[in-house]
Image (cartoon, rainbow, N blue to C red; front, side, top):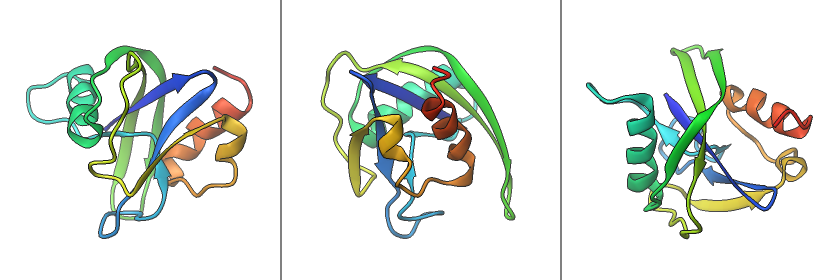
Length: 125
């Protein structure tokens, strides 16, 4: 799995998971699953285009997250990404928001995203 940390003026892009998906209604940093033969960077660029119609330049790894869900184990690479000012579209999300780390504290994130939120909130950017 990969996720993108996209920032604009101290706010980060988060998406609400749609009904019928694992952890529906939770907010997350957009990203997705790797397909055969693609690098994590290629995957993130593809997923953000498919899910948000958002072309990005993938930057450096922000952090790696491991979480053991009851159904599966997840290893997620979280990359910084730049969108060049393009406007994302919620093609596979019920809503998108640009939030400061403090504003994220009031939302429900998947357990695997909690360490990302915590790192942002403690200023370890």
